[in-house]
Image (cartoon, rainbow over all chains, first blue to last red; front, side, top):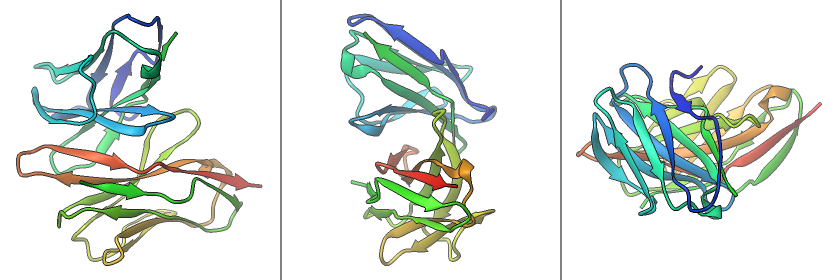
Length: 111
Length: 117
């Protein structure tokens, strides 16, 4: 157990639907990062939050949004889902100056 | 912009041999960090080793060492005495951190390592 908890582990949904992925960071970590891993795009950085504030944005689609709550857990919302959104979504957390700890990921399948 | 290049899509290595996985990077930032992660077939990302751009010595963690050649912008991972359990995807990644607290990891495309008994 890495200390970063992601739920659910697997998600199957239909095109056009909306899903929410959840991440609880390792105790004491203030930063949360979301990554998407797909066969054609590889590992892509989506977004970073630090202590509730958005700090960096990567290749995140407008249909996707995220937030970090006061208890530091984070949610990634994916809407109007398309087949191409099928991927493994990782959350990672870190302390300032420290390394990154990844969760086990949520495997999203859009059918 | 930062870029990580891993030129070996796949490698086959005999068990107990040493293996070197190549990684080159490109950044204009003088301060950066280099990471290697292992991703087994189960999918999780396992941290292996870290090298900071100002570190004078190459990082080592058990059977893993990082051959850091700053002038050549390379950060190769060396696994000594490979084991069957080393079969996995290996990703090289770079972190650049701004003064405003934003940062991200940029990943390479990975190398799939297969250890042959």
